[in-house]
Image (spheres, rainbow, N blue to C red):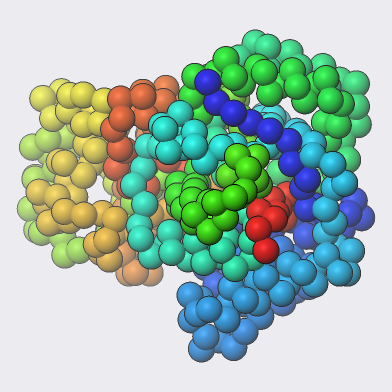
Length: 413
């Protein structure tokens, strides 16, 4: 079972919600965020990436950045752009992209569920990224970005959610980045809140879809607060963190493609042909349509690759396409052992399109690119249930949850 509960969200007023809502901090670099922030003083990026309001020579990890985030959060509330709800509520967050809706429950989940393994992960985290969000949560005393969780679809939850949406108007309804529609409903009926809370008590596990670093950081700050305030009750806000829970059958994983900057051997195509059936496609971008197939862009041409059965890999991890590429190409042919830290490889989310791969190779920033077939949601859940870890940069979820629509106050200052 997992524990969820309502909370007093700090959220934007209806008239500025679209202006406040921003892309997540971790899909933009500082320069991109600075451009968006300079054009929009209401953007939540002034809180989530507060370095944009400081001199360009200030490190994004300097303590002044987190202090600026805290002061900006207070300023947004002073100006009425953000306000805290008077009583704990649940919320529904629907995103519609290309006509496909997904509806999640905005709630607070328990740090103890993560510690016990009831909230499961499928990726490792990097210490420097954890430390960034730990400092951000610690200094702002808030979860400023929601963690994207999923669960195996439940008929009771679906029925309650659908009934609420059918009878109520959303409080926010707007289009934003990538032409995605965002709708929010408040769930302020005690009986309905209790029905959803009880329904999740019967759900055995939640799974992190996106936000492993945010989860680790939120939990570590919560445990720190618990040690600092031993007299606090188990219901203290810092024992919970901000999450949005989506049924797994409403989600779609996009491809997470690879670009590599390495010398290409003169017999490289022969080396590839030893493990893959190779078809030269030409100028038309090759997007894999089935597992165990890959696109490869080299010297202005696309190739289709299909791994030979004996090199396809066995087991829940080795059989993933991201593992096959690493095990059969990246490591043996390029010497890339650790794709989390090797600066010769980079990753391009599927939302950017295969043209981005071509551009990166054509401009000689990288020498070769690979387009991937994405893992399925069943792959992700199976890996997490087995207690295994996916290779880095295996999953790219779209649409992205916007930041700034919900802030969870830890109430410990």
